Image (cartoon, rainbow, N blue to C red):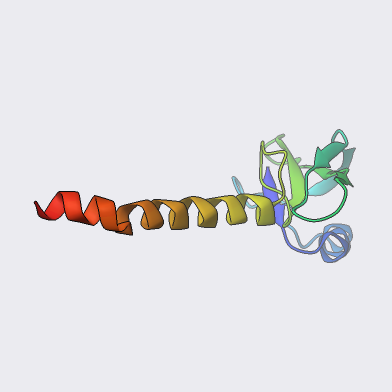
Length: 107
């Protein structure tokens, strides 16, 4: 899977033959679409995404182009995963900086 920015720009680059295979640098061609996926967003309803599938005739591999809001093999949008990581980081910092924990460490 390849994560891409704007799907409309990628579609234009694909049609113009400007997308290269990450393995062999061959020219990628459209190859239909991958299955529709449900992606949970941080705010609002779930997003339905139907990623573009591409094929490299040089190395015969196929790939899926995911929009930048998605991560491979994840049902949550990148903003949801990022928010969870930040919350986890701050909850860990809070528990480590808690006065009772600091008092036990100093004794």
